[in-house]
Image 1: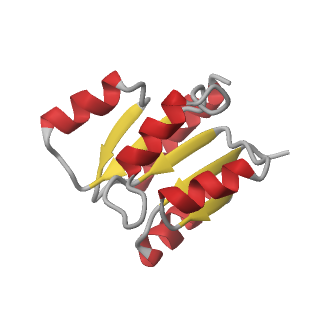
Image 2: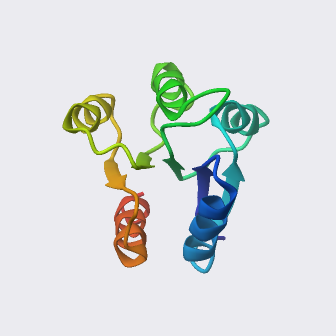
Length: 123
């Protein structure tokens, strides 16, 4: 059985690219915003990793992460942020919230695969 990754990304081409990069090794599920991600989780699904953008409509990545970390059921799911927001204060904030890593767009696919493998390999 493949490890499952929940990709939360509102940009369809980026979501497709992420799925293509990771789908050979992992089962990849895509949610277009934080609310869709929470709905998917609430139906009994549990990923090994969440890879999320920050700036999304409906429910942002920040709101998603805050909800996950407050939850008894989901707070232990590792989260990697993949965003264009390169502000140092944002990186520090999300690290303090318990996010595993903070990768900037544009990203190198091999670096992304390596980071994901590091996190999932520790499970």
